[in-house]
Image (cartoon, rainbow, N blue to C red; front, side, top):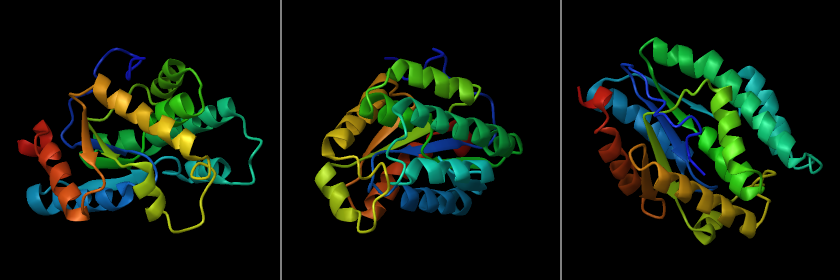
Length: 221
């Protein structure tokens, strides 16, 4: 399964970076996204926003509540995949695309690769079809860099000290398939992805992420 259904790079000429954080639950994506935003501003003077999927817009927030609600046990796998794509379509059109066009960077906590991992590998849907739907939903707006924070399930579970949402309750086998899905995508597109060991300290992870970000053309120029 190709990690990019269109076969192209999806990269366009832009002055600010589009960076995506991916990975399973408990890896620290949200923390690292916020740290990266600060570093971009402090170290190279690049303004960026931090956003997330699902839920990065008002419409997306309503979709997110449906997707994460543990009471929605009857939600079918295909419906889940399409709701994710709907959130992504609105997010790319309303927020990500216009923000990048204005010269401001975007740091996104999850993107279409999560659907390939969760709905494709995790739920057992056709991963290639999931990728195609997601790329169509975003008009093939793809990031400059995907940061995969990889972490083993035992460490991730120990970090989740709160009430779990519908995905987090899916079980170890599901999350192991999701992890394999992320690693497979990273292996298929090494020029776009960097894999970071999420078991390291917050500062160590942040430094490894910065090493990758600092190599982006719009960051080094």
